Length: 427
Image (tube, rainbow, N blue to C red; front, top):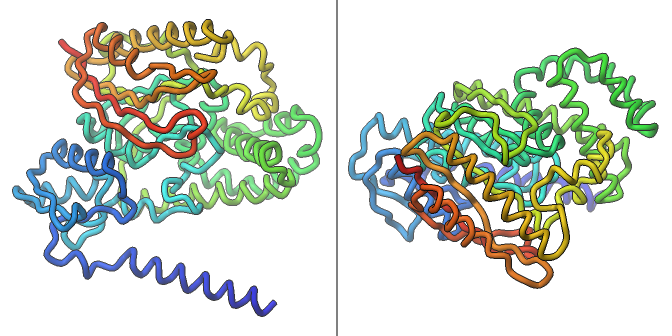
């Protein structure tokens, strides 16, 4: 018992020390702006500089690329950078909103703050990068950003935090549920907490029974956003049991409480910073046939699925089946998972082109579409998706404004780098 107690005390002291240094402002004296401590890569510095330019700053980089001197500094500019920026810790002696937001983190991963962590998803966006890109392409509060492959909901959450209205679709009902829970639970958190004990008591007997028993129990909850919250808590436990062999009921209860705490964190920081949250419109849909009018969207940020090399249906088979879907049927609708060998690549390329064509149609003239994509390896061969994207987007009428190389982690067996491609739609 004694060694464990000592270890616990040491961890508590380490956390206190970490918090002390995180909020230490002594270094900021004489500095206009300083990067966040976790900014490490060249592409991040490139995005930080592009973001500052987009926000209207004239600057020079100083002190080993960690600090910035603003040449046209004003209170209005300071306030704008404090409220919107992504890569900066301080402006003068004031912490940025983003620095305060990322302190609300229930995980060990620096990028999984607020509700970003909920449900494991391969190939997740880096949320800090997405926040920066929203600024870089000039999106403002009440503008509409669209994502045709909404995935785990990273862009939805970051747009919401900046007051930008988000419209997103995904072919996967699991992805749509993730995005909705991460962005909509904040509005129903009181009802979620109020129902927690009674729902747990009702749900426990059905946790180990057939899936329909669990979902049938949830039918008694009128609010769809509350139902989705508890359904995703179950699917998180389903994932933990399938991927990590964790005890189902224990995982469900633990994750449910952690999810509630994360949503409470979100509400707390939104209230503290007086954030005007953007509206979220997320639904199941097909990127090849987007149900939106021509020239109706102010910006697009997306990353097409790497489904040539990563089978998203198989990867989430346990959860999709738990939701009542037949994998053989749902597979036919997904981009990139149909066919084998050469046919699979050809079908993927054809589907992606249709998606790009739709993106061009719905985007307003002179607005930007950002595509984060890399060349994946399939059956030992590199699939030139980056080159296809640049060529076809240019053919449609886009102009490539920026091509930023980004090293990625977590998908080394599939790919090692991505390109952040920023296109502008010609008039």
